Length: 368
Image 1 (cartoon, helix red, strand yellow):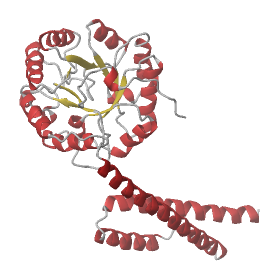
Image 2 (cartoon, helix red, strand yellow; image 1 turned 90 degrees about the vertical axis):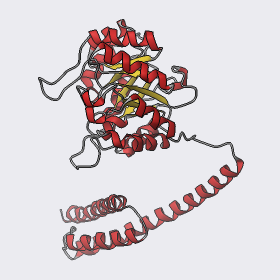
Image 3 (tube, rainbow, N blue to C red; image 1 turned 45 degrees about the vertical axis):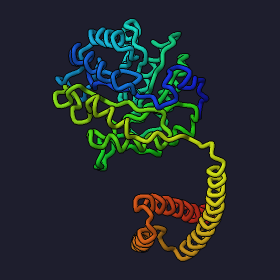
Image 4 (cartoon, rainbow, N blue to C red; image 1 turned 60 degrees about the horizontal axis):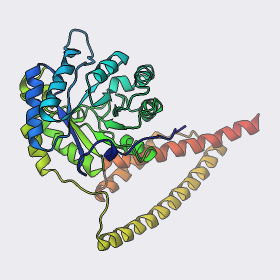
């Protein structure tokens, strides 16, 4: 069940001058000098709106650097006083919320590990009751849209109207070029469920590699995400955490100087006319495609009846392997993505098996 959100548009709680929101800063607050110096360099770019830094760091194993702790909040406070940048940090329990708010932190975010645990999110939500502070919710580590939605809803139900999501990618068993698989479809589905919810992209955690950050940043903005949260360190090679995915403030400025900022629509009547015509063609093709899928499923039912009447098994892998091989060859010739076609064929196969299973079960019911 989907619960409606009572939220304020991003431009009503932070002024970005009509541009994407840019949040940047070190993965971890290490020293006061590191935090303040980085903040000055980021402010000098004229492109960063919010300074981020981890004060409390949830680590996979004990003994690793788990954040400087509460004293780092005062470093963020000093950085804000000297640069004018708003400040943000991650909170993982009620104590973190209390201390961050007392220190005047402007924006809080809930991390991926916390978002995966409804008990943790509820504890944070309870601590936020009656507070007017923006809260950003990262997607949970595992690709579970329901968990992400639930975390956002819990924070919203606590009365937080200044709320947004952070898309930071998902853990995957398959090895890819990324630290966390973007799985863009999950972020798109979240946007379709909550169209007014701002989604900020975290290319640092998706990439795990600074060389890929410009590519993911551009793609996120092309997909109409409303901002970026990027890890930037004064000297990434010496960072205490996630050194490989942090960039220098200068590199961040260079990237933002060349990145293309697209608009969701155009005032050009000729563009709108052309787009309308192309969309009508898409609608026509979709109608035809759905009708052809229905025809295919009708034939699947006929095959199911034929197998049932002749006591033949539903699953015949040699035939399916032959289908997949031929279809992928055709798809490649037509310049279609192999991964897309595999997903499409898997869905077709799954539905075909389901239909034929129903037919087989009908025979059992009649026999009984």
